[in-house]
Amino acid sequence: MARADADDGDLPPPPAKKKSPAEEEAEKRRKKLTPGSLMKGLVRSGSGDATPAEGDQVVLHCTTRAMDGIIVNSTRREHGGKGVPLRFVLGKSKMILGFAEGFPTMLKGEIAMFKMKPQIHYAEEDCPVTAPDGFPKDDELQFEIEMLDFFKAKIVAEDLGVVKKIVDEGKGWETPREPYEVTTRIIARTADGKELLPSKEEPYFFTLGKSQVPKGLEMGIGTMAREEKAIIYVTSDYLTNSPLMQLEGLEEVHFEVELVQFVQVRDMLGDGRLIKRRVVDGKGEFPMDCPLHDSLLRVHYKGMLLDETKSIFYDTRVDNHGEPLEFCSGEGLVPEGFEMCVRLMLPGEKSIVTCPPDFAYDKFPRPANVPEGAHVQWEIELLGFEMPKDWTGFTFQEIMDDAEKIKSTGNRLFKEGKFELAKAKYEKVLREYNHVHPQDDEEGKIFANSRSSLHLNVAACYQKMGEHRKSIDTCNKVLEANPAHVKALYRRGMAYMLLGEFDDAKKDFEKMIAVDKSSEPDATAALLKLKQTIQETEKKARKQFKGLFDKKPGEISEVGVVEPEVNKNASDAAASGEAASIADRDADAKAIPRSDSELAFEEERPGLLGRMWPSASRIFSSLGLNRCTIL
Image 1 (cartoon, one colour):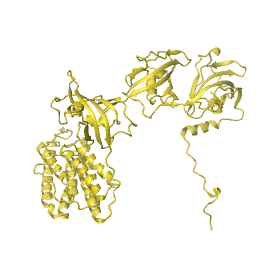
Image 2 (cartoon, helix red, strand yellow):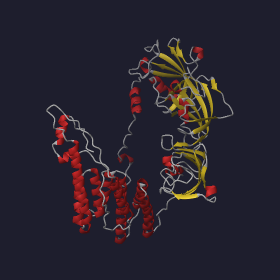
Image 3 (cartoon, one colour):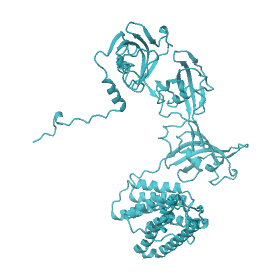
Image 4 (cartoon, helix red, strand yellow):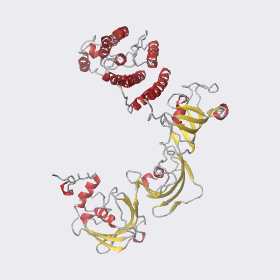
């Protein structure tokens, strides 16, 4: 009888960990080491027992000597150097093989002498660094290294032009970015320790993205958390001049930075028109503790016109008897710009929002004292919010009642023409339905009907948004479960017709009659409209290409693009019919939405002429007119 607890020797070896390209390259270079090619002698012991590891930045002085003791070059002033230590990031910086193998053996403060054969320094085949002019790269050399410091480095710029050393960890994980406003304390020194910007009591205040500090410093601050202290090493490529300081001619600057505070400033649209500026911090972690999803919100706000009057047009503390405004997000109950910003606030936070008219009151019921086209400013305080109900512990009937309330809100938004918001409501319920499990056949039937109704509502939203292909895909979800679902066939047929895919539309309308005789009047009307649409499209195509082939051989007529004639009244009537269908709560209803007006084309795709005239595409291609498009 075999034992269940087999010895380790019976088990297959674990799969070998795949090496990174850098590790493979290091291993390839390491094979060039031969006995005696790299020798180390200890000159002065270091402190501690930690040695540099991959990802650490090492800071060191280096003096290179020939075997007879003559100094070839050095970083030290006493040996003719600039007094500026070298910096490398292990695993990232390009360096000679002897350094790559020698540095990880050193302690902090240690001085060591490395004797290297030519193939271990600059005479290495495919050496990643170039020897200085006049350097005896073909000679055996001695490198005296003093390991000044090493630490885990934060690579800010991929070319290592900006590297950060964290001195004291900050609070939280949020970091500033454009156009945040930051308050900092900064000391700047050259690489050899000369002070460029002395410490002072008053901190520096500036806005990220405004070029108010050197580029490399701004990049480094963008990686810092609140109250973090760090040293940011910046090389010449990132030392841009700024109002803070002029840095021309410097090779490297070390900035000692304390990020005292930053104000979250968000460009909500990315074009500078809708700006949210946090003036009082809230409680919690951003964005986990924000009302990102549909919630019941309680806010105090003050609205002001951004014109020469600066007049306040509403203040909840004055005009609402001191009571806060309560509203459910995701329901279009406040201006779009207002809601976008509140969703990114923490409880207790106060923010100033500047908003353009198209996200304020030009597309929302306008207060009497707010003129059309007005830019506004809101001062908003989020007092708190309640998250949406969790269906855990609900009975099936309670779940369906709550789903119906959300669906009704979506129906209202659909009727108001807010199709994106309506779709979000329907999709919210559909997501929650993934966790609902009916207990018997009756519940299963109710649940299936409700889900089908929601999918069809989503399809209607896509159709009104002009995304007919997505409307078709959504209808397919219903038809996969019930191929004889009349509403789904009708809605998919309408989407096919709007796409110009008339054969598929005809099949769906004809199938309606086959599966349900009561739908024949609506299907017949749809087929008649489909026939009229095809005739109109053919007529436009003939008009567009009339005379194209009436020229003599070698001559080609120019094909004009005919703009489609859109019947606005028909479009409005169709929208009204769809809204009526959406508002119908009876998922089992067989009635099909009707419309007496013409169905206007919202979108047509190339390919129609090819179906009516099979040889057309070949003819046009031979004439170089294969890019013609029928509109």
